[in-house]
Length: 99
Image 1 (spheres, one colour):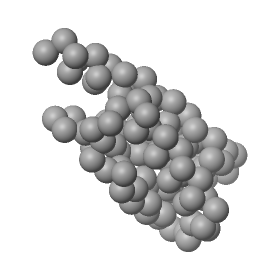
Image 2: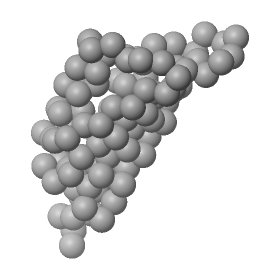
Image 3: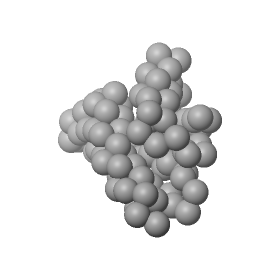
């Protein structure tokens, strides 16, 4: 699966990008018709500790799954977003089975 990572207002290091790609590639175990995914990493300029936003868009035929999480670290946000996407992919897979 092709993973596009875009970081806004900062440069993401290689380790973070590899971590995100690894987590997203695991999603193919849950649904094999995933076309690609786009990840947007943003740092909000606030005084709060949870100022890192991870937005993941997964393109599947007939649907786009978009999940946005805000956490202290990008890794934590990625893991929470991937968990949400897994649940969404399970729902999409059930709909396809019913048809």
